[in-house]
Image 1 (cartoon, one colour):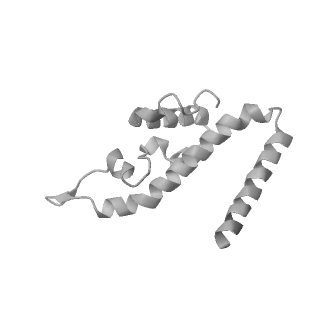
Image 2: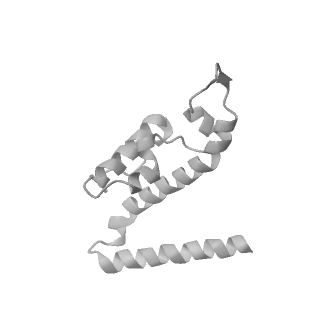
Length: 128
């Protein structure tokens, strides 16, 4: 039951965000849908990345005192997407105002598509 309440709270926040977008922009919902969904995708991918990262790192083999680097295969085995540093949500959020955030988001999407062939050409990149 607690999970249902949590989902309902998320739903209310999403609707409030959509209402804010509708009220404070000249865009129709079909014009901001893809950029918003792209950001939600990046945030979810990052949350999943963080959820399994520590577990993966704990099980990595060590040789000569050095631990093997993380790979996308490690994350695939845990049903997650490996994210290059520039595709991680915290990196994108922490960009200073002087940086081109749209360009950074596009590069993040391109980085993911480069690592995952099945996502090539699927992620939104021209809408930012």
